[in-house]
Image 1 (tube, rainbow, N blue to C red):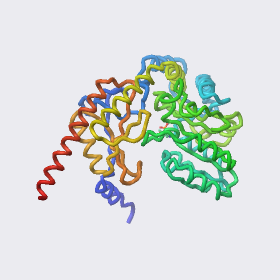
Image 2 (tube, rainbow, N blue to C red):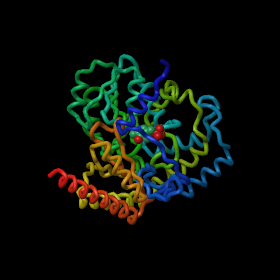
Image 3 (spheres, rainbow, N blue to C red):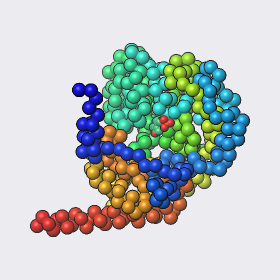
Image 4 (cartoon, rainbow, N blue to C red):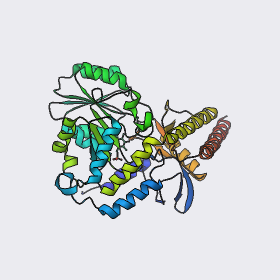
Length: 398
Ligand SMILES: *Cc1c(COP(=O)(O)O)cnc(C)c1O
């Protein structure tokens, strides 16, 4: 029999769930070249436009001269450089936590942290729309894995109140990656405290984009380590580089250094990435105009969509999905935009729940108002074509 891979691949195609990659030439920026064709993209997580910032590039180049390219070994052997160490200290100061620890990716940070903190007799409570890396981490940890309804305090409390787990960890995205909404952290922190649980927030999409000085969602709630003992951020989104970190108490970070397997058994990120990130952290923190410009674009996009009768999610962040529902229709709309030179990804199950396929529009500080208007114009055409085809369908039926 062997491995019949073909059947599953064909089924995925039949379900409109088959994914394929596009190849871009050049850096992350609104105007990209895909297969030789210039396109205007609204799908990057480079929210502040730092992935291609000249100062970040210069730091990366200088550090490559100073440190070479490879990380060489794991942090615990001989891979922990001054660049990594300084970035950790700066991230700790930025997040207002005693310490921070670098990981090579966000996926690994979540895997490492959750499985270092939890084991067989413990319980993990996750929002059902949490990022895949959090869900996978919960499963890997061996703790009793429970999902609560999206942003539903009653559902969380019900599960916590019935739990006899030793350690209890409540885990949530800060900004939900496919919706753009912000988690109700005030309520979560209160209920976690009531049941003697810890709260972990993955703020991959909040850092840089929200909070004063880009300090993320915990800043919106004024939450320190007593409310959010485990705070995770990624560096590949608004920071524009690569990697991730966990910030928290001295004991938390020492625990991760000892027990997080994705920290211990992997090569340190290239020191030049850490140096580039030190520069991007400074820009991210001080350039308030990037957040202000981004907010103006978000408002412009939302009011434009409202005029077109398009359904948006209640999001104040750069993630502005247009909910379509039907997967085939979402794909078709994405193609209709592509024909007009606009790149917006259709997000389908299993990334989002069935029946909620969407166009995930993301805005960045590198976009201009003219770019947003171009997107709105293209969407208007898609909406108009849809109305025409529905009308002719109705006429055929009578
Ligand atoms: C992107 C993302 C991650 C993974 O981070 P990488 O550094 O890309 O591996 C984790 N959590 C959330 C919420 C994310 O959006």
